[in-house]
Image 1: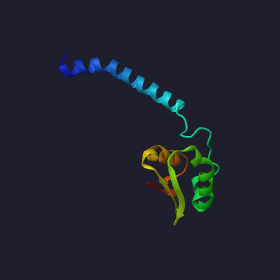
Image 2: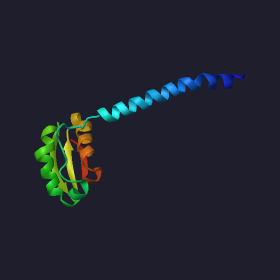
Image 3: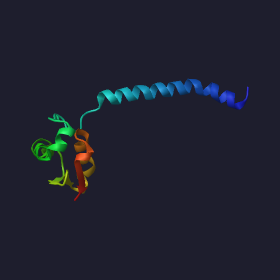
Image 4: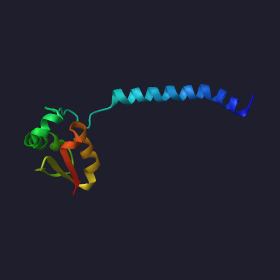
Length: 111
């Protein structure tokens, strides 16, 4: 038996074990993942809000922004909603916003 054959023979049970472990971890993460903002639900889809930016601005300012940190300003600029977030909270807050709404609706900037 060559060294390569011996390595493959040894790798088979270990490889199967690693695959099963990764598979189980994947399912655990999928079924235990939480939404970024507890209790928040999106009233309309991103396609609707693309045509009604004023309603999106009101929805965010009324229901989502109070649950997020670091939101400095929000205003309509052209065909997008511009959101200014402070540097400290930028990653977490911008990720939460784009989790619920399409990225194409926003220009998200750091202050």
